[in-house]
Image (cartoon, rainbow, N blue to C red; front, side, top):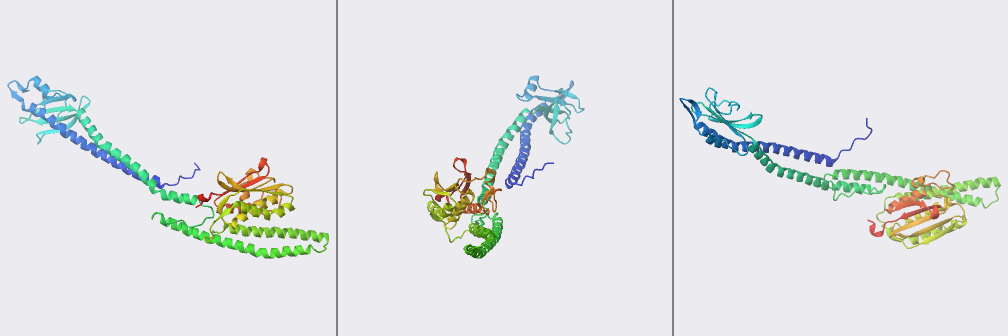
Length: 458
């Protein structure tokens, strides 16, 4: 048995199958009716011409002392049954069914009782024929038959004349139906594109102004679901922010008290324990700050706070100067390669992005390396990058390091695995892209964020 999932149903396929089946049924019915009408018309037209020689022969059947015979010259008989297309034959039978004149192998006539003449179909020497039979007043039966070539040609001409326009109309109808269905399904395709182009945490309701009435219940139900998700997400972010905020104050107080204790003369073993406590407190404080930053990056956009014209060069310059002291303390060369790069951005989130990129680079590079902060544009696309000469990120890990709380096994440093996750959230908010590549010369890591041009936003 095949493990392939069943093919999902298609509205387009269902509509087209129904329409095409209906058209095929109607065209088939039209073909049957047209063939019947053509057959009747051909028989009506040629039966009248077939009856004339039968009457002429019947009028000349005489009975005298020599017996019954057709009182017509042979030339006249040949003229009566002459035809350029079909083969015409005749036969005269006596009241006793004896053959008086004509061919011998023409089938006997059907019952003529009560009818002056009849028409019927038969076979003559393996070929279909049409026969006209006439009974004379003295009981003789005259039959004249002909093959069906003219009739079949007329039937074919009528069928072609009637069915070709019908088939053209059917093909045109199928094409128009295909076009109409495709255009009618455009709102579904637009809805699919809008949903697929959204960021994972974009929970804004779908616009309903241009939604067709058939899709309105689906869109309204989906908007209700988004509203519930938005409420749940807001509560989760509020809880995260409140918890992180409540942790910051006691952690800051604990850190301050530990630093005050370091000023006293303490036994070496006690100082060692306090240093470990201080290190853990610093990590916890940083984690609380990162959780606050993550909650702020994930939050639903504040409509009262519009994006502003921001020069990435100024943001990067300010952030780099704030981190200069830590870089010097770690013996890290913090450099700048800043060019003008204007974007529409959030003035509160962009500094968080730069801070986390620089903090990540300094945290994992160790001493003696270098970190370069750069801004500018590539083919008119603004970018911000942070490049370091640290151990680098393996290619197989570059998508994973964007997940929350993920750290590469064996990595030194005391990070929490939230830095690049926060960066990714800010990038998504700005509809940008994040690239992780090797640094210059294949050494270290370069994290580059590409922002949309200002005229591309919307």
